[in-house]
Image 1 (cartoon, helix red, strand yellow):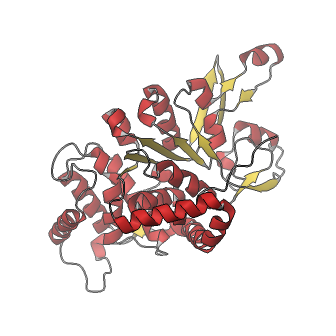
Image 2 (tube, one colour):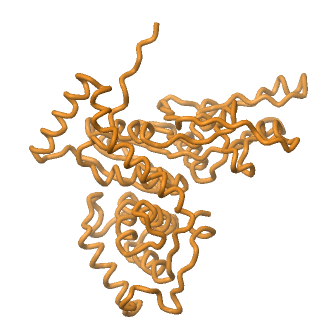
Image 3 (cartoon, one colour):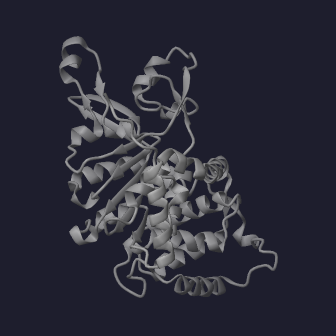
Length: 372
């Protein structure tokens, strides 16, 4: 006899940790942002927030009986199995599913992550048989890795590659199998137990540092809410159901318009100047800031990014990429960033009173640029 697990703690009931919650929401709006690394001491709500996000997100439409959660509306991304199944041109059967929350153990091996091909069947019977791994289970869902800094570097590389590419390809003895692997990668770690290599840190799109809340009033809120949740989880979720639905609907609405959000050349100059001024290596941070700014605009129901979207995206995208300077602390100064942005904008030239872009900063659809 199995024991029923209590309902997941509501996302909207989490006290404080606003930066962490915002980073999770932006990734939920656009999985192509590239995941989130949450660094902080134990007992600060890292895993609670990740699980709560999964329970909050709306159901997705999938190809029926697909172990890969293939999207019936995106045949170009289908797994080899589903593509072969519907090669006759018939429309696939469809079902609605809750998104999956997949918890990856620190001891996970490469085969456990990417899946395995049965070479014996292929040789003896000419059949291609693929045993799905973690990446298949997590497609279009959330892949959660606690203590990611203790995971084998090679496995971390595999996860980050799949998160960036959106596909998993397994090849053995001249036989290959591919399936979609687009997911929200959430890694958590306690810096006191060791850090990730800089090359791996940079591969996480966003990062936040969480600390225990110092305010007595907020700590009391945490106590009261957890006592109420433990006493009656179902009743507690019922109380928070309106807030959960409101946020879920807001994320769903943002997903609908994310492809329509545009930017200006002035926005690109601001982003490039910020990362250049902070001496950020490579160009991944620039792309991440642009994607996150678009998601922030969509979250607020807008189709054009603004100064504040870039600011909010920057404070999530650069802390783990900084090597020195005034922003070395993960809890960087927003005021200092704003001051730098004002200086950059003054260098570009005075903007129109209406806020409309000038002729040389014409609004450009971001669809084919920021989300490649």
